[in-house]
Length: 255
Ligand code: ZN
Ligand code: FE
Image 1 (cartoon, rainbow, N blue to C red):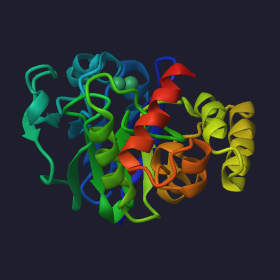
Image 2: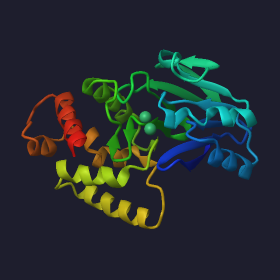
Image 3: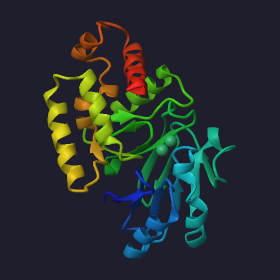
């Protein structure tokens, strides 16, 4: 049975997620921006945390951890490469490692770029991937530590997951990402439709996260560096995809 996944808005624009296995009663939290809304979401369902999965070291993804562990002494899992700057980890993981939440295997993917040591958690049976600030809804994280080539490789790995995969990313940035996306991919009808959908979702106060990988591949310019129309729009016909990605990322930084 797939895990039950709950999206929890935190701070001003962060998301944390609960992934619950009804059979075993195990519940994983993905990222810990602040305790309040996460403890409330657990209490409302009478769930107890068994695991906390950390995607990367930024404060808005880890600062709530201590306050959560006081009430829910769960096993904390994060990147071995970042153990020196993450909160204390009970289990250090790297690309290709697999652990379980209940009977659901969780695959660790290195998705460096936003930070070096950023990881994603892929749950194939539940068709879910938790990407935080790597692949985001209609965007990707800013390159604070990694290179464009590194982020392109990370995004390409995520894009290779099955189309039906649901992408649980770390922030509600979608509306501002949309304003940029249309400037590099102005004639994409799927993008125009998505922007209309985003506007009505936000007007209704509904989160735009998660999204499907199929929709990201059709509309997210950071996954579309190989698209001939985007390449032509940037005067980069037949350029290497990593270079086109680097140009799109640089334009977003200036946008
Ligand atoms: Zn971050
Ligand atoms: Fe963040």
